[in-house]
Image (tube, rainbow, N blue to C red):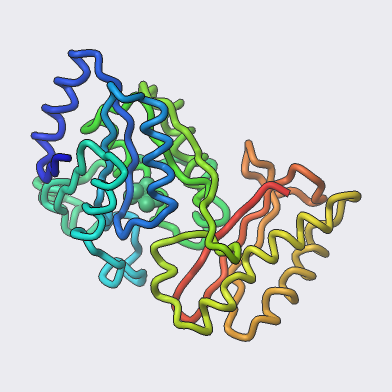
Length: 294
Ligand code: PAF
């Protein structure tokens, strides 16, 4: 396994593989890896085969965090991440620094009129409006920008994302289609703890009581699934029932619940089997998300 911290070296390697016809599988991450990430790596390996290469990027991307969010506290443990990557047969771990990824970048305001600063962003204008996009206004622009940059550096044939970030995966697929990136996007199932909590690097922030109650997100998805098995229900009524269900966990503070069409991500007024549900719930300062097809 090779660790590549430099943008130029990553791009040189990727170009060499391309010329040699080697297939490149890519899993972009922000590190603090868990079993969910490793399942994405296994999926990438399966797609490119033994003769292909699997690249994992570890980069906590500042442009997808608002100033009020948890960029500074985001958990980091590169040594542990590298061990995990090695154990699952990753070929390259790309670990760029902020100055490698965004040379000259300060913050968005001071970038205006600053000719030396980083100033090009990728914006998806449709699928990113609701849910996470509404709750975190700068988030998806940062995600699409960094993923576009990573695709240009790693030149993947296939890239694997987790379904836990369903809206993110939909936006990346749209970006790839709209901007003609020659990469296949695979969305792999959400990996869960034995009690059903979706694996996330942010689960680390939870204290013991919060962790015990955090399973309410999974239970709310299950309750919604059961409610629409045989009949369709008004979204407003189902939201209200689930709001009460979730806030029965005393440490839970509901941010949003949405029912939507999985293709357009537009909200539906009537919820039936096959609709998609997503939710975000705070435990203290920690914001957890989850989603499922009903
Ligand atoms: O899902 C994530 O971990 C991040 O949003 C990603 C795709 C690595 C971009 O920074």
